[in-house]
Image (tube, rainbow over all chains, first blue to last red; front, side, top):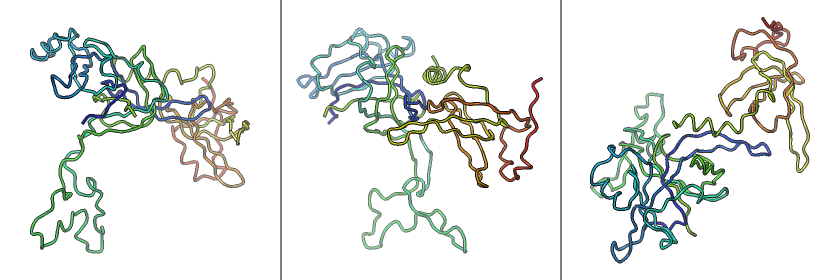
Length: 211
Length: 120
């Protein structure tokens, strides 16, 4: 079940910097470019079994998209858009297909959640990936960064979910409760306090949970 | 617009004008008038010393000031564009051949005297 949101947008991570408050405190911020997002489709209980708004973001040239997607966007009479994402808006009924959503739906002081895809770390061992402590580095130790025992003999199997080396990162990560520090509607920019998952240029979903 | 330019534009409004801030360089003797907030009172505390490093770019630019106070070396890092900095006075410009003067930490006061910079 999707979280009910009071507002949400698709955006892009621009990067991090710092800004100063008038009384001189330095605030670490992530700059996000969000919207304008178009409502591409409304999903309703009768037709689709659930309620959601499908939003589209980032206008691109028509030749950058494939025909099925262009057809879908054409039905909504919106420009060619690269990304689509669904949000379950609290006031679902108020929105119409083709409507444009912008950053001005967020205001300074709001608490938002930001969802993105974290940076890929490649194939990592058990210490980096799961925080195992590892063994001594010297005194003849032959147990530096090993996973150690992966289970007892009695169950005669390794339990599901046992942490072992493997691909790390590139997971969908949501950071909750980030403070909106500034909104620049004329540039579609949103400044949130703290870090946000993913590389600069990565796609993010920004939304305000309805309490 | 590309990302670097958007970032610079966001930072731009927090960067003070060149006219407000003197050009500081490693080797300069400076007095930094820094606002300190104690409880609900605000006062200005000067910190005087030698600039031994300037690093960072944009709003992230900081400089390190070193002084020796009662025989103890004290270093303070100030963000160049901090609104807490009331004023920076340049007392003397030293001629140095390095961007980072960390080697002065190991020198005595006498050895760390610098020749005055002459503007060409």
